[in-house]
Image (cartoon, one colour):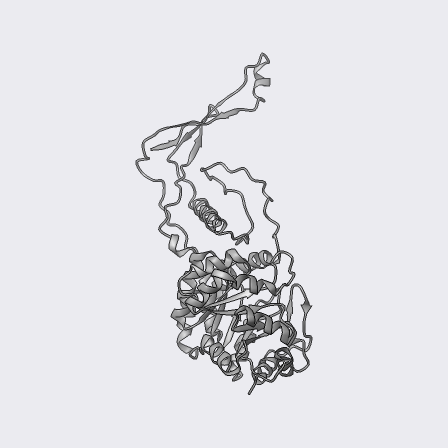
Length: 411
């Protein structure tokens, strides 16, 4: 088995004195040679648990400690690397593998800022500026980077074992998907998922006198089939407390937890807080993550709304087993511009046929303000719409629903 040959250093010949020669920088040469496997590993270390559950069995590249010698050479050594550093090395390798998987599926949103290899890392030599990749490419990536830190802190306070115990005390979920189908059958119009949202990064505060429970009740009076509740605090001024308050206030509409999900832990947490459905964003989550999280949702009785933005994401999601609900977001993630023709584009031709064959319900999202907009996306093939801004800004959100559809849909 090939391994790294001792790293020898040489110095260029020089006629100067020995003291001057001591300042000459060494040149390193690298070769491979057959080298027997070390007789005994310095330590054993399991691969850290990651969201990529299907890949847990993958054998990550082995690394070998390197020891410097007095003659300025370096040799392969069995001397131990501190276990703390070894864990960081394994975690770094797993993160690189995650990046590879995501990139292979066209995912541009990175889970966290790029970092160079940790101390003592010996492997494929990657030379990278320390600050390269430390600037988010768009607002979604900025949110995800913050969410990664936030979720880590939340998990410390409420570990998964505790959440599983709390599940025994929460009320049963309501049928989110069934409510959409029932509304569409009753009205002949796309079922409404009305969004309880105080603010957004692109629009700022949408409603100063924001009372989430009163807004939710108004939506229900106006004929909404389901509600979407923003739970991100930093960027949307939402909270899980809002979700919990609406559920405990007697609102009967099923509730979608509108969160930026990056770990399965968040699904359990949303269920404990009263969610009946959860949002999964294809621009953030690789296929295996989505598939795994859908299974978790079904285990907990939740519906999963899988959101796509473009053709590549739609094709990926259509290839994932268990998808029943797809949301098409008409907002460009890079520019934040909205174009409702995106819905029609993604439902044309073969994609539309596959969606109908699979019996998937499609939800139109973003840029819907008028009855004409609702008619346009309905003609394109959607059976539900998710609307927030155009409703929450109305003095009476219930009347805003009638204005959006051009008729009273509460009857």
